[in-house]
Length: 341
Image 1 (cartoon, helix red, strand yellow):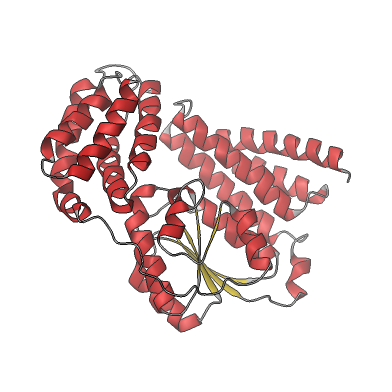
Image 2 (cartoon, rainbow, N blue to C red):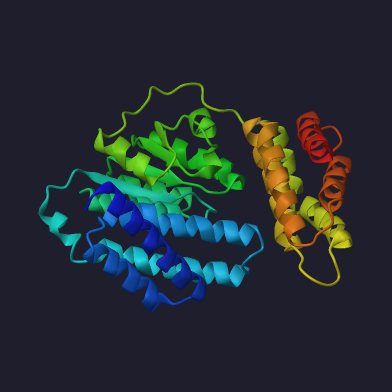
């Protein structure tokens, strides 16, 4: 199959899977995947250029308020079924006789429930001949370290999609390295250029599953010489201790602005995210992390009919509750100024 025909086929299968996923039609989605494989589309291409692309579209459709949370969950479940079929289809089993390259542990950091990116990586690594221990979502650091000691993988691949889990990601990276195992970090939480992964001392960072698999194919990462390590801002401890009260106060403010009729945001989840992202930004010492999140949240709330003043008002409430925390105050002020502009 030449490149032109391949691209046309990939686009056709992507549209078929997109329609099936939105409809929640698992059988139609699997039929599309099997048809692609039988039509000569490589399994890795199907996983990374069709299934992953559809999943990204699903996430964007939810953010734009074009589909509900229930529809997003249903479509994701359909895509997960397609992943299983692609990974175990007869066209992919011919690789089973190839020598095993090594053992890799793949997991989400503690608190992280977005498994789709890490599942993509697990299946691609298996296709390429790696033995993979896929641990799934929300792996507590203590349990992860026990598994590492018990199985001795050549590396641990850690995924985090939400930046609120950066403190937990830091703990997992440090614990795995203390056990003598190098860590590959990936996922949007670590920043678009992996800056937080490097700040935490991860041995290597990859922007996506294909890049991660390519890195591992070139050789297992070597453990870096331990450095001073990232030191969390002391203000983080105060924010973490006050977290429940801060979430309550932010929720009250957002609820005052929420429309009584028509579309609205999930104010409880939004309040928790606002406080969580503030904590994460202070933890890593980067106000831009919170400012970027605030801009995204403002767009999402606007798509759901929440008035524009709601978010700035919530940030003002936070600022009033945090006297004596200059870094938190500066972070909130930067976000407030950006929203005002």
